[in-house]
Structures are given as structure tokens and as C-alpha cells.
Amino acid sequence: MSDAHRVVITGLGAVTPLGNAVSIYWHKLKAGASGLGTITQVQGREELNQKIAGEVKDFDPLKYFQERDLSTLDRFSQFAIVAAREAIAQAGLVFDRPLSLRTATIIGTGVGGQTTLDDAFRRLYFERKSRLFPLSIPKMMANAPASQISMQHGLRGPAFVVASACASATHAIGLAFHMVRSGTIDCAVTGGTEATVTFGTLRGWEAMRVMAPDACRPFSIDRKGLILGEGAAVFVLEPLEKARARGAQILGEIAGFGMTADAADLTAPDIDGMSRAMEGALADAKLTPQDIQYVNAHGTGTAANDETETKALHRVFGDHARKLAISSTKSMVGHALGAAGALELAATVMAVKEDIVPPTIGYLGLDPACDLDYVPNEARKMRVDAAISNSFAFGGLNAVLAVKKFA
Amino acid sequence: MTDLASDVIGIIAKKKRVEKPAVELSDRLEDLGLESLDAVEMIFDLEEKFDIQIPYNANTNNPRTEFETVGDVVNAIEKLVAKKKS
Image (tube, rainbow over the protein chains, first blue to last red):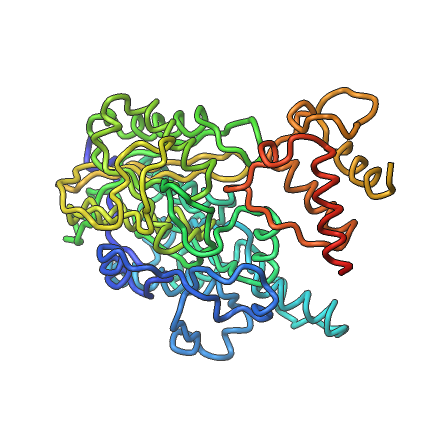
């Protein structure tokens, strides 16, 4: 494939429950640290049954923004902007007018500005106020993070938000990848953001009865469900040809993207939909199953997802499934919903770049229904030339990205 | 049949996925075609109706093994309601 049609990552930024920069995030993932803990930042938390989440900590908005700008920046936009700044700074790009016209901003998010929505509802229905803050609507709209990033950096090409619940970021990055590969654009600032560790959202997840009370233990015996997380990760994508021409540092190559719909059940995972998405990503990347060493699993820690994902991995990889290193970094940061795919792609890119696979922490032992190698509890030093990152959403919407070591 | 039993039957009947004119205490939950989210919705309806809290995690609890029949559910609800009153 010509260099014009290969897509590389030249910048990466992240705000996560493990730390608010990629270097800290990756350092702690390798160490098997947990970003999950007692909820400390949610108004009304003492009333909640759920006590544990993966909150972004030590994130003082005034460190990053002027006070007057915060009236339009929900927490999910703040995360996205901070991650985008880090990614763009690392890429070292200057968006002059010609490049800005050909740069896309495509961000995935599940549900929009929930902090603002919760605050607005509390004000209306609980405090019985008759007025909302004037900029509540543009602050909470789902497309706000894409708009805010494009405004901050003057990115004037295609800009929008993709919503597919837990696959939002993977869909967003996949679309950006295809647009760069096809030559529709010359650069993309893309990723995902979510800030839904809020009273209303936690109550909603409580009602589904799928959250674990203590820890997220993907693929493990005695796993009790998912833990909510939050955060953002943003990538700068460029054609290899252009990245090379300007002497950019190349972190990795996005090689393929697959997406499918189950067209079956709204919430139950589906082996067929998952398998076809993985196969689609491999085919798009022109990789065989045997080319893959690492899978960053969707691995939510629910009984149903982890068993179904394991079956799908068996179906796609056959005998090679037993040779794969598979891990769920949700064990360390929780499920950041619309941002999850971006946080996980960041982990995948770093694993491929540094030949270290992050672990699945909290793993207690073998569940016969989950019989593969989930890199339990400790990171593993191993050669990783190619990997996939899985995202499987409520609504039966699946998206998988394939990453190759850049060489 | 007690009022409580007929209320519980009414809640379960809304979620059944098989053609059946009436739900009875002896009916097995499995035979009513209830799926995992049906259980979550039923539990919500029962909690709302009787103002009780039913501990339930969809990952670790399986209503089909814990409660065989509609009557078993009625008994469990009776206990929770009695506990609330005491």
C-alpha cells in the first residue's frame, strides 16, 4: 500500500481515572494500578447504592480554562479539549489555513453533557427554580466536544460527533481513519469523551442491575459486573506520506476498521455481530488472525459480555485464540462508555509501540466459560506487531480497530 | 388468592413471552419465556408496587434457578413485605 494510503498516529492525549496525561495513564496501566475507588465527586453520592466508580481525579478546570469559558464547557467537553491539546502538541502540527480546511474533528460520545443535564434537572425539579443557566443547551449538546476542539484549534474540515453508546469512540476513530486513508481529508483529530459519573446516570445503571459493588473483574470467576468510568482520549491521524514529509514522530499505524450490527437484542451481546466486526477489521487491515498477538477486549466484567466475547474470539481466531494475549483495561479505568474505545485504543497503541501488554487486574481465577489468556493481574513484556481493540455497544453496534507496529 | 399474589401475578403476566390466557401460581418461570431483562423490569415493578428493596445483580443472580415458580416469587415478596412492616 502506498504511503498516501497508510494512516499513522502522530499525537495522543488522554484524561483518565489513572491520570491526566498519556504518560501517566500508560505508566499506571503497565503497573496494573486501579483507577477505581469510592465515588467522591457526585452530588448526592451518599444516597446511591453504587459506591465505586472510575472518576477522573485532580482535574481542576481552572488549571486548563478561563473561568468565563466554563459556562459553555461541560465536563465531557473539558476532558476532550485537554486530551486534544496534548495530542496536537505532541503531533507538533500548526494548523495553517490550507491544513485547517482539510482537518476533520470526529469525536465519539455516548450521551452528551450529563453533568449539565443533571444540574439543570436538579434546579428545575428539586430546587423549583424557574430559570436555567443561559448556555445550558450548547453546553450539554452531544456535539459540543467536536465543536469546542474545532474552535480551539481552528479546524475547519468535517466535524461531528458519533454516538453508538459503548462503541462511540471506536466508530468515530474508524470513520476518521477511513477518511484519511481515502484522501478525503489530510488530518483528523479524533477520539472519544464521556463524563457520566453523575447521580442520574449512576441511578440508571443501578436500575439495570449490572454494576459490580466492589471491583471490575473481566473474564474472571466471580465477576459481578461493570464499574462506570469516565475520561477522554484523542488521536491525531495523518497519511504516512505527510507525516514522513514533515518528520513527525510516528506512534503507530491504524491498519483496519470493522463495524457491524447484531440486529438482534437491544442489550444482549451477540457472537455473530462481534465476530463479524473483528473479521471486518482484520480484512480491512489485510491481516490474518495469526498476525495478531494482542486483543484489547471490550471485557466489561459482566457475565454475558465476557463469555460471549470469548466465544467470538474462538470463532474468529480458531486455534490461534489460545496464543493471544487478551486483556481488559476496563479493570483499571472502568467503563467509560462513549470514551471507552478511545482509552482502549490508546492502551493498544502503546502496547504495540512498547511491546508490553497491560494486564486484566482483579482476576481471581478461571471461569470455564472464559478459557483464554487474559494476562491476569500483571503486565507482560512480549513482542506485539499487531493488535485489535474491541468495542461492543448496547443496541448491538460493534466496532473494532486494528493497529500495527510502525516500521 | 391474596391481593398480594394477584398483584405479583399481574406484574409477571405483563412480561411473559408465551401465549397463555392466565398466569397461575404453579407456572414455572422458565415456561413463561422470561428473559434476563424481563426479570430486571419485573423486579422494578415489584419494588415500586410494594415499596420494598429486592437485592439483585443480573451478573450473579439467576431468577430461573432461584425461583422455580410464580408461587415462589409470591412467597419471597410476602416475606419482604412482612419484613418491611416489622
